[in-house]
Image 1 (cartoon, rainbow, N blue to C red):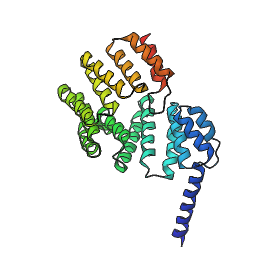
Image 2: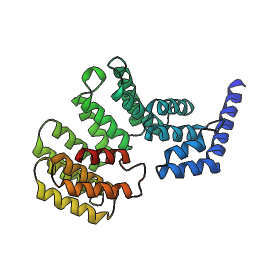
Image 3: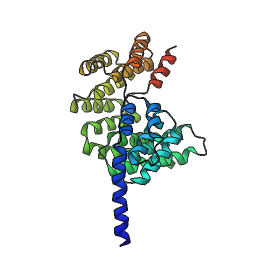
Image 4: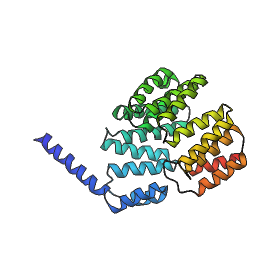
Amino acid sequence: MKRKFNQILTLLSLAAACVLAAAPEFERAKELYQRTAYRESLALLTPAANKDFATLQLIGQDYFMLADYKKAAEAFEKAAALDPQNPRVLHWLGRAYGRRAETASPFTAPGLASKARQNFEKSVALDPSNKEATGDLLDYYLDAPGFLGGGMQKAEALVKIIASTDPAEGHYAQALIDERRKQYDAAEQQFRRAAELAPKQVGRVIDLAKYLAKRGRIDESEALFDRAAKLAPNDPRIMFERASTYIEVQRNLDRARQLLERYLKSTLTPDDPPREQAEALLKKIG
């Protein structure tokens, strides 16, 4: 009887959460988030007395985008407590802990980094098709030392999982491993194969263009950036990535400045690089 009563309470709680998430304030907050108006989104969400899962997750995303990673992690922890098997919130939680680890002291950084890895791994186990989660976990394995759970063997095992759900993404992931090993010809072939398998994905063309620029293959890189621009005219990502590539290889700096100024005037979404990164690159040019 007690178990049945608990099940009824759970169903009622979920029903209430759906009602809250469908409220006009929440829909407006989601719209503001998509327009990168994160403070305005928070202003609508934080007054709510009983915050449901969707509200807590969106609050966490707002704080994350505002670089308040501690408050973001707190919101994601509360959301995960309501739905512990939700892969998306676990991924966000991992990202928040990862960013906290980047700026933490040597004493607290290892613990935060481990929490990031654990949440990434849980998210990928629940949904291996989430490219952002597998990408973040791969970056962790490639960058973190072994005592924090990183390592090339783990990265290679993850590539197989990625390739099983998205072959193009699998080739891209393998390219990152080959590049890390300084197997540059093999990495180039993997980048090319990823672009061939997903010819309409502008990001694949950009990946290859950036890689060739780093290898000093400027003419080929420029041709690929031009191709990307034709595939997705006025796509803000192309402006940003082309400018950042110019700055990285120290060429076409005037063009880079123009692209970044156009980028900052563009209508951006949370999927685009933050405005702060573009502003930082402009300062780097001087």
